[in-house]
Length: 465
Image: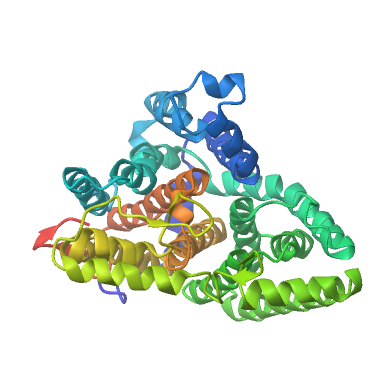
């Protein structure tokens, strides 16, 4: 529908929200899901070691090499979510936009995964498991999310992450003060969940939902404290994305909130600058030398540099392009892996779009690209019409985290980590439910609807999205 006719109706949106029925069980269920994913991400390395060695009796009861999050979301978690949906009020449910997006992604990765198995690629089943299977949560999340208050769930997630951020600050300072690499800080996988909490806190501050600069600064410092290279890059990316999306929101008092947005970001930058300046001066300057080596030269083994500035990513991407040139149209199928210079295990290529191009060719890559861009376009296009503060900051946080994780696939293997993959797909499902609600409520208000405009896309000539 034309933007001039799709206006923000505060009274109608508040009416749709105020008189709805909400499931407190559903809210706690989603909170527990995120809490467990946070714990699994924070303790990823010890859990991975116990899982691989079957060192704990609990892991010996599970199928080989299956993470607890996989067993939960494919088993008991799915059953609990389904029960909450069946006992909820279905009259509140709205038609979900984007089913064709979901089916297209499944078609590409499952189809080319089986194609890779046919070609006897050694890791085809692992690629299917790491790329597409975590998205199995989306169909029930988009329904369950309509029976919960998004702001309640996200606020709880933010509070859960603050203690972990405090731990990271203390341990990060101790690590650089004593220059002891064995000081236990949260690994980069767990810090991605802290980035989600930081995005939530920043979105609330930006939209005026709650002014809480202390928790915002704690989360920001907790993310940056260990100075993990991919995490710092992602942290910067997340700030740029949320700042861009913030100016897509049209709320009353927009000018003042814009000024406050800059003030909040300026406060965070100043605090982080002072913090980094302090820790760099600790440990007799050894910390600064280590950071320079870590960021500019990568990892060294036996005194020999094996990574370079990109961590050997450029070499892997060049290899991907060589694979793509061999079969440019249909690709070589899922299951191709490089080998780590540190050992005989397979190495992710650290660029999902480029890996998708090499594995699925132009056909699969274009299908995934069209599907992803249509979902992104709908999310951004509908964000500006959120007329209530609570929905505005929730949508801002969900979209920012989704776009941040998608951006990290350009230089990392984020979606191959089970906990982060499940978190991404749950957030994507919640965002899909949220913008589907907005579209449905607008149609209920008898606004003119045109299927080929910004609110709906076409796919091969059909109204699919």
